[in-house]
Image (tube, rainbow, N blue to C red):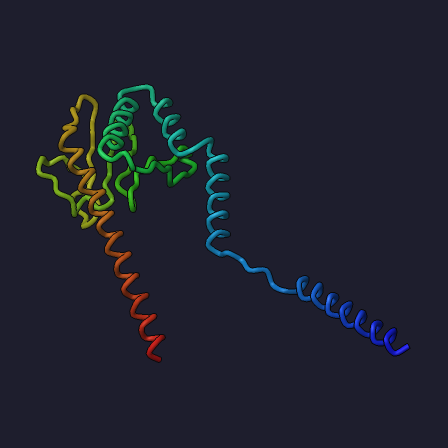
Length: 202
């Protein structure tokens, strides 16, 4: 009799513990990898934008060039090829879509924006985001000269590109961006190390 009662109590205890375990599993908050979630969300958004815009940025720039059936399309294609030759790691993007320009503006980036390529009625404009800080020994910059940041090259029909000089400017812009990005990483690492040191001594 006593053995049976003890066994019943043991079974009840095990059942209760098992039940509590199930409840805890059900209510225990799930650990979320925020970095993974953020990356997935960005990829989804990027994919959605590309789908709505009609393909990847490179495909959109291809389509943009094909629709310009004159010297401007040929010039933009040549400039694009020179940019990619100067830096094979260059990233192509399309930005600033609006009703008056639904195709947007081709953008080339590496550790930040390098330059944009725009086509107007009588000119192809290549604008460097940090052009004012870049060396230009051949004097290619001929537009947006009054500002403290940007510089542009306006190319008209019949103009010849100094490909070597343009390559120098592109590579200088990439070097400037990557150096700035590396300096930023070092500053953040040093700041994190100081914070950890203060936390240990507190």
